[in-house]
Length: 284
Ligand code: 13P
Image (cartoon, rainbow, N blue to C red):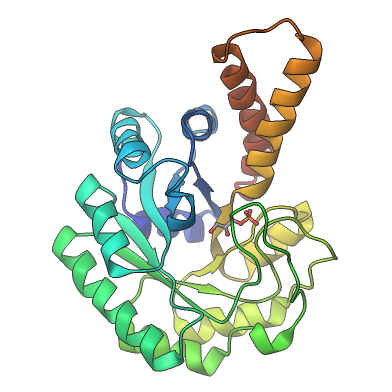
């Protein structure tokens, strides 16, 4: 069933857990994410990032996301991730998404603020919630960007600006830069836990972690207990899919059709997401 982003985040706060937001650009990832949410009976966010639109458009995979979320027994949010334009976010709402992130983090402050306000106004027309981003997260979810910038404090979110930003835009959650990066880590992440506490206190809204792949259990738990209630996760799940496919092909070299390969991918994602869910929702 569909629930709102606000409801999912409230569950996270009440239960001291991080709500997983999983990018599902392929059908295998989508079914895997829903199966895991149902198996562990946890709320989860299905996300489609603009950068993944060339893989499957929001009209195609997004329609499947909305339809499967509605008929699932799990509580699911369907969310536009890293919308870089109002037009893309609108495409998501038209398909039935009930939440969106506008990402103007690379724009000058006032420009980010003005477009985020527009996103909030648009979302109201659809009864949807909005996440925005302040501070710069190195890397992207395209599987190729480097992760230079790890630990560069100049990119971290400033709590005073964050407070101003949230009160002037009215967003429901704020993605902040506090030491994670998108994609594979090429060096140890340098998480600033005190900064998370400051950001949560200054803004009054849940803090969102982008670049959720590749952290240790204690790192996730430490972030959650300090105010991170949404954890965006993609690269390691999709990497698990590819590794599952490679193993399947090595074990079954005579395979000459695609369908069983997609099953191997889905099962590998389910294994990876099960471990994540156990950690984020204290299901051990
Ligand atoms: P990772 O790909 O590093 O897990 O980050 C995902 C993300 O932040 C999606 O917005």
